[in-house]
Length: 561
Image (cartoon, rainbow, N blue to C red; front, side):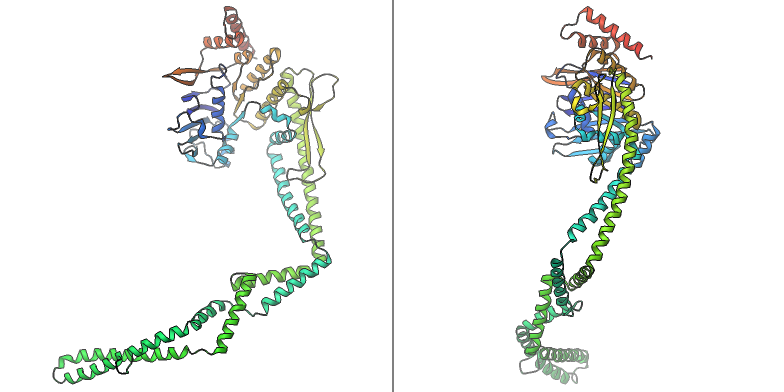
């Protein structure tokens, strides 16, 4: 259940910290006091939009935190299955912070998470019924969503199987449509593929030859410049008059004559001899290199032609020889497929037909499971509606089969209702009034909560459009739900407020020339005063206090049963 909510720097809220209790938690307050901000902040922490415009002070961060206790083993296992551990204290802390730069930071137990992960966890712990959510019942497609949630794991597994099979079916169908061609188009494609294959294969490509050819081509194109420079080097280092080799040779002779005069020059003579030998080797190798640069014109033309061919193939079929060869392999596969085109199309049709049979079987299983769940849910909703003052109500779910496959099965379904004796059942979205929709949604929410063990239910003005005896029935239903779930409810009705196990007042005050929203828990005496306000409006008289006291006493007695 939700233990605590902390909101900071959001709209009219400066900093509030409120703890909730088990059972029915009622929130009341004057219009404009900030009830919508409280629920809006709750929605933010459950993954709703967190916009910078909501910040009370743009120079400070906005923060919403929710602390949950988790004492239900099924809920714990659900959380553990998505890698969220309540820990030894069995608590989950969800927080969302909006910094001054407009960036939202989402955390679960101090671990940063995505909004998607946060929504997944929040969906296990709490069900928030926002204002006017009952209007979704007017959308036919939402009825199947409600049923599937009620159906739980069994329906979800069947839906998953249908979804996977449907994707496979569509892939085959798309392939069949894409590959279906007439005889003339087939022959045209085969001729073009054959031309492409022959063009690649006739080139007799060798892996890596393009790189070798490019090196040889650059060398050939620049051979004149290379040869001119190399010849200059050869002349300057050679043994012709004025060359380095000639100078070293003469120096070596002169040093040789000096050895007789001073034996200490022997080592220097040997070193210079080594230099002379190395220089001689260098000139010999340089001369051989220069001779290798003498390209034959025909050889160069052949080299250029080969490179042009390879580059042309690269432009058509890929940026490397390996890619070109792979492309050729793909063309050959496509060509062979077209050679046996009729057999290929027949095999696709057989595959599509078989997949369609499997998809039909899975969809039928899903329909059967939905119809069984629909009967059960309809009975539960009907019983719940009778508790909510629909005395002669009939409720059911109508199924129709679609004439085509979808990822969600082949079902078209909607809730059917009759609220008066003798009236035929009609689609809910056609006949329900605002007050009726509120009670139907409350009935649905209560049924879903019992089925999936949602620990906390939040209702924002579920009492829209109801009053009198019906309001009393709704109050009793809320109290009944509160015996097995934590319920947090914003209301304007004194009948519902009187049923509170814990009653909170949302108030707007002016502090330091600023309007601030606060929330506080009420004592029993304050609860009676608040019920009197809801009963009497602007002026609270002794009579309304007496009525409020009596209403609270009757509510206390009703909760004992």
